[in-house]
Length: 74
Image 1 (tube, rainbow, N blue to C red):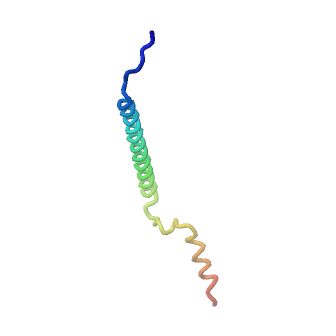
Image 2 (cartoon, rainbow, N blue to C red):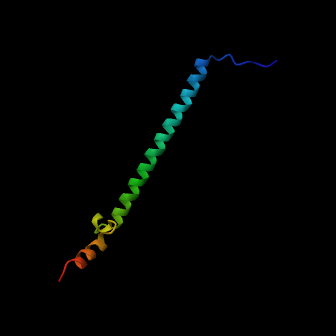
Image 3 (cartoon, one colour):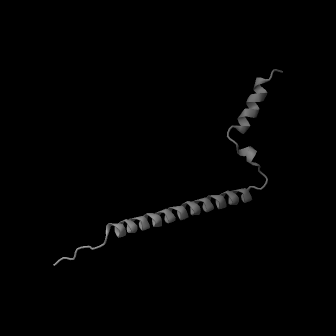
């Protein structure tokens, strides 16, 4: 003889909602962990190069200065 599940639809829905809530918490913890790791790697990179400023690392920063001097006459 097989046992039939006597759980009401409300309890089944509550179980599904519980698992979805657990998945949301896990996802939030994962995103927080990634943000912490990214921030710590940025701080580590900044500590390794203390004399450099962020302006030196902008894309095209060096080429725009040479292009400005090439455009001016004289």
